[in-house]
Image: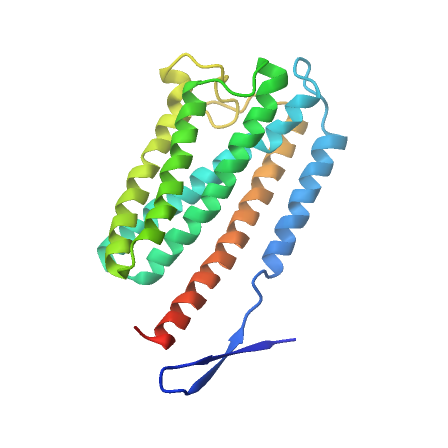
Length: 240
């Protein structure tokens, strides 16, 4: 069933627009993929010899981080595009990606703490990678706060674009922090120059998790961008 949204302009005229569903088929596929990931990780992937059941968080923690980095990469690229072309659609896409990226970064920090308690014996430590990831979270939370604090569209888009680009520059340092500093985090076992050092069944589960989380990111990004587009259209219809 298709819904119609009726909006009224300043002159009292009514405009009917087709309201698309917030979440489409891609979101359903992504959720099913995440469910399949959990089932495979819990019931069909063997335990790690030293960490035991706690290692199962591995299929959520670094995959969430990878998707968060992907989201902030989208923020940076679309921000560069906006500064070049002044296309407000790119600004809306950057805002949408930033919101979804903050969600995935939050998941990363929470699951990291849940994993750290049984493995490291503490919920939190000022490890270089943890600290930099928390700093990245603050940058993009600040990005969203900045967007809400500036009313002028052009100024908001410009300032946000600069912050979005600068924030993404932190991502390579987070990945390389295990090489640059003494940290509790191990060296990369998947995203490294040589061959991934995981047994095949664990690697397959990880790739399934990464794929399903990426689909979920795309689905959430589409939904948030559609909402931003509807908000912009409504604001344009209402006028200054």
